Length: 353
Image 1 (cartoon, rainbow, N blue to C red):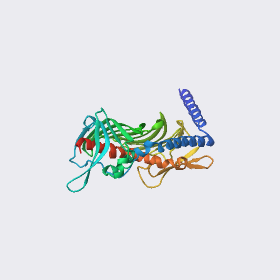
Image 2: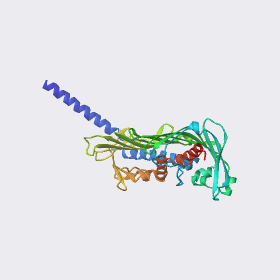
Image 3: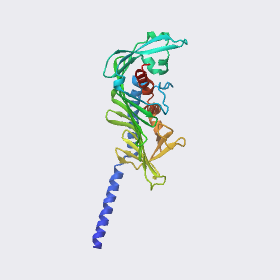
Image 4: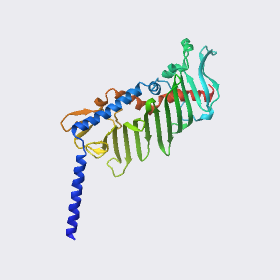
């Protein structure tokens, strides 16, 4: 019996050694690993160039510092469904004067019935939402070369911590489809937050943001070309009462075929290529400032040191794309365009202002 146990142990050791050798053999050499990392970064840079030069980019990422027209105080409640705001509306400002001599602008005129809410307006006004509240003589020369067709809209607001929101829309510029904006947001005192936002650009590029709270909290931001993931940063926190701080953390950065993973309790992050662990490179997370929520989009860089002693960083690999990725991340997180344009106009239609 003892001899049988020894044989089983020896076979197990041989299997482990064989598996270990196979795993090490599957690691790329330094030159191949560097080439894979550079190629993945280059694909991302090509994508960010296409996205940042698209007409939709300046629209979706607009940030003009103007507030929504509705107050968000604790006693304000509203339910606005698509059936209450549907129709075709065109920007046709008419200037009148109130008893106090202040300009009052009737910004939009309903020109036709429609199952969607379709808003047509000058692109210049979209790029500077603050100007929607103003009327200049030169506005008469502007053409309604921008339109947004909202096919789904649901705005049920009870308080800052209790609302659900849905938006599905398509934008066109100069009568050519430029992109789609889709948002689903549910915030409940009992269930927490379930939020998703998505920009679909031309040429098959899509940027997505997701946040889910609860015992497992997940936030992720990704950029795709059709069904291929080009970039993703993901943070996952799992409640675990036996963990040192009551939670376990997992951070993942994916750029093409390369994935970097840092798990709480593990000293060094791991790097994978095509799902295979690479043992010939060392990864170091460099947080530029002390920030528990740091990401590449916010105060973080990642250094990769190869076997030959040379190194590179994520910021140097994707260069100028870093800033545009940050802009996309911030915009998908806050969706200023929906707040400044779609919601603002929807409120005005609903209240017949």
